[in-house]
Length: 282
Image 1 (cartoon, rainbow, N blue to C red):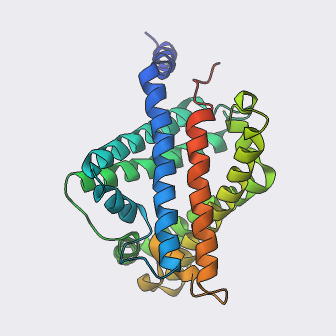
Image 2: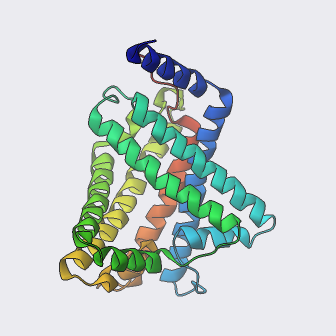
C-alpha cells in the first residue's frame, strides 16, 4: 500500500467516524458545555461588578467551583470535562478536513481550528484534573506563573510576546466576525424560524464583541508583561475582567462586558442546536 493510498484510507476512516451519531452528539454536547461555562463566567463577573463576588474567580476554575458546589455537582463537572473533549475533537477534525464553510479548506481556517483544538484540550485537562481533586490556582495566578517561568528561559520573553499577540489576534478576529456577521456561515440558518433567526444573529454579534474585547485585553496584558519584562503585568481571564472595573467607566464597564459574555454563552447554546458539524465532503 502506497503512502497516498494509506492517507486516503485514513481520511475515509476519519469521515466515517465523524458520521457516527456518538461523535456528533459529543460535539454538540461540547458546544453546550462552552455555553454553560460562558454563562457561569459572565454571571460571576456580573457579581464581581456589583461587589458580590464572594471571592470566586470569574474564569474557568471559578465556573467549575460553582458547578461543583451545586447538587450533583461533581457529576456535572465530569460532564463538562466530556464536553470539552467533544469540542477538542471537533476542532481537530476541522483542522484535518476543513471547516464546513465555503472556504473551510484554507490553511488559515485549518490552523485556526488547530489552535482552538489545543485550547480546548487544555480546557479538558483542567476540567479533568479539577474532577480528580486538583483545584489549582486562578487563571490570573497561572498566567503570572507561566510568564515568570517562560522569562527565565532563553527566548522566553519572545514566547510570552507571541502568546500575547496570539490572544490579540483572536480578539480582533472575534470583533471582525461580529461586524461582518461571519459566524452565520457556520450555522444552519435555513433551519431557524423567521423569529429565531434575528435573535440568534443579535446574540452572535453581541457575544463575539464581548469575547473579542476580553481576549484582546488578555493579549495586551501579556504583551505588556513581555515588553516591560515584568511577569506581574500578566493577567488571566479573572484579572482582566476586574481591570475593566478600574477604567473611568467604573464597574459598569465590567458589568457590560460580563453581560456580553452571558450573551455569548446563550449564543453557544444556539450553536449546539444549529452549528454545522457534518463531515466535510471532498
